[in-house]
Length: 232
Image (cartoon, rainbow, N blue to C red; front, side, top):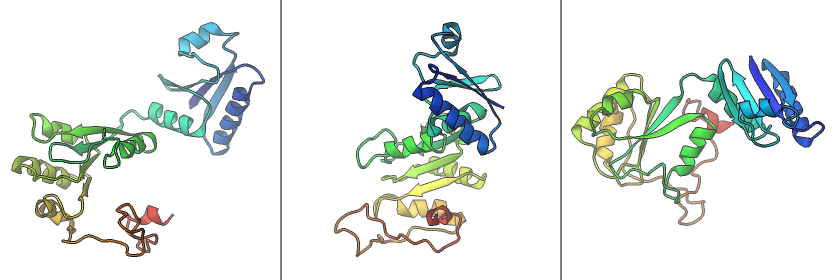
């Protein structure tokens, strides 16, 4: 069961929001026990839980716990997933070949993608260097490996690692920036999957002129697993 302890003053907005949120989760079938404590009346309990502000909620599953800032659905759902999951999924982004970086906050970077993977899909997002000692062991820890627009070819040993990862039920996401990058090498990597990058660039003539971010299609009639969620 999920144990929730809300810390708020009686009859406060925070207390009402907490009770309402618990009621919502219980209606959805969640096994939740809850209690509401006034930190002014129970200061020792608040200190032991790490509570510093009114409205904070202690989330406990087994012997694992986490404090969230307030009773919101997004924060609580994320905390329940983190506390209830003993092993996290890891998304690894290759580095060293001019790929787009997960720490780059510019329009060309992937910091927002990394943030969404962490907050919405609960991935541990990490860079992975394939040309260093121990790379094979690091790669084995990855649930997903992303090649985010490499600009220079991979070394033969690096490509061998990626090929092996793909064969061993690994998940590879290969992104290419337009016509740049080691396209032929990436096609060799993708060949066992029966897919390849063509020589051109797909553009939507009805979209805004010179806008590379324009959506090419808004309809996805295919029932392929790759596009199924896009139809929702």
